[in-house]
Length: 370
Image 1 (cartoon, one colour):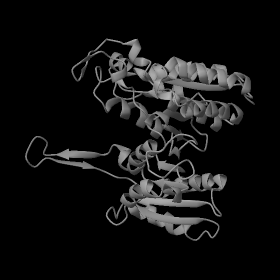
Image 2 (cartoon, helix red, strand yellow):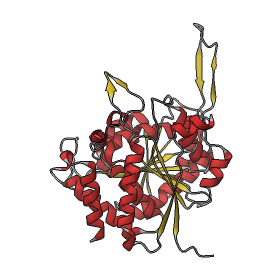
Image 3 (tube, one colour):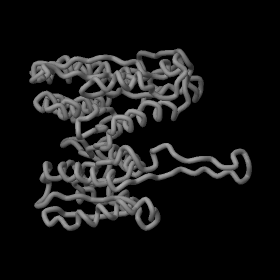
Image 4 (cartoon, helix red, strand yellow):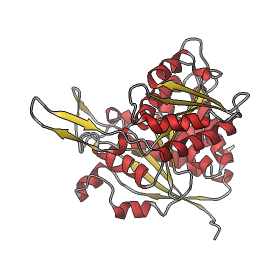
């Protein structure tokens, strides 16, 4: 039966995850007239307080079964250091959803908007325009390993890297589709990024898929070690089109990508299940910014405090662009483009840095209604 609306699950998360989610929902309401189907949002308060209340360290089958019913998931940001130490929620929510819902592609555009200055001297929007497709379900983030001889001088921590042929192959297939759609150069171009001169066992499936792709005459295929790639991101970013890499390497390089494209406040992420078997999840890359929420005692956050004036310093653009990516993946291109153009207008504004959160959100809402 053909559906007559989009059904989105929303996890605001903690602290300023709530702030940017509220901003995204206001913009979503403003852009309704540009949608082909209306959007319904259901809020799920899976946050630090929820984990403490239910004495859990990861989402359970009951929560996951709820989320499975939705078309897509929007996540604000998670983490409240006054309640739960960092790492618990990241594994219990982010990694749990990514792996349980087989969101095997983490799509991270690295695109510097025209009119926004780059931190790289001599580079502008013409040079910084590529995508990183990060493997999102394997690698070093499978949470497997052990600690031997804990608490002794012989303590050893072991973290396992799992890379499968099927995992790399399906990521490459997705990246190939992105490269063909982008049509950036004469031929679609893929850069494989790994560290096969050192990580020889985990590199086996990466090298195998790379060799297979080298046989495709209608593609430009290249390989770089991860360290060389990081250097080239700041030296010659214009050489890249679509990049595919392992989970942890992708985590690190996409943060650098965020910096060269205008800052963490503009970085968006799609955790994609391209088959549609499970919902995909979309999120801004910045954290919950507790320094823009709590009162401080020196360098320590004071629990159960809230400073509204600090929240006005939060920038909502990454969340708004993540929501736009979710609409784009839902075939709502007109509405997604309207949000992106409105956000880019904010970023180009010379007074952007001094504007309050409410002002920026109001400007986007006014723009998308035109």
